[in-house]
Image 1 (spheres, one colour):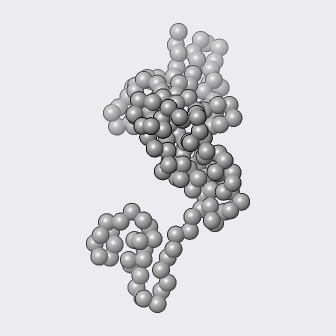
Image 2: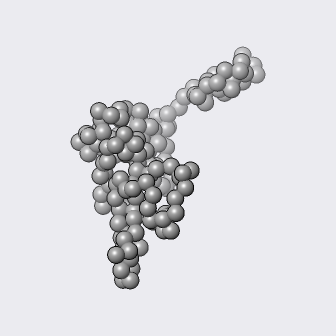
Length: 164
C-alpha cells in the first residue's frame, strides 16, 4: 500500500510514495539486463524458445509475451550460479500456463532443462519416467507415495513411477 492507501504492484511506485523528503530523488526501475548487459544476449537467445515453434501450439491460447519478458529479466538476474534454474523455471511457468489451457508441450530435452528421473531407476523393476502432462495425481519423483492433496498446484510435467 502506498502512503496514500493505494494498492500498487510496482516496487518503485510503492517506495517512492513513502519518500520522506522531496529533496530525496525518486527511485527508478533498473532492469536486471541493464545491470548485467553481458547476460542479455544469452537470456534473449535462451528465452526465445517461448516464441519458437516448440510452443507454437500454445501461442493462440496463451500469449507468450509476458512470459518471454519475465524469462529474459529473470535469466539476466541469475548470474551467481543457478542461472539455468531461473531460465528453466521461467519456461516451465509458460508450459504450465499452456497445460492449464489443455495444450501439452514437450519442451525439455537433454540440452534444455533436462530432468534426470532416469537416474533414480534401479534394477528392481521400478522405473521413473518424465511426461510433460501427466495425470493430476500420480506417483512422481516428488510424490513417491502417490497421495495427492488439492492444495498442491498442478505442475508443467510429471515424473511418474512405473511399478510394472
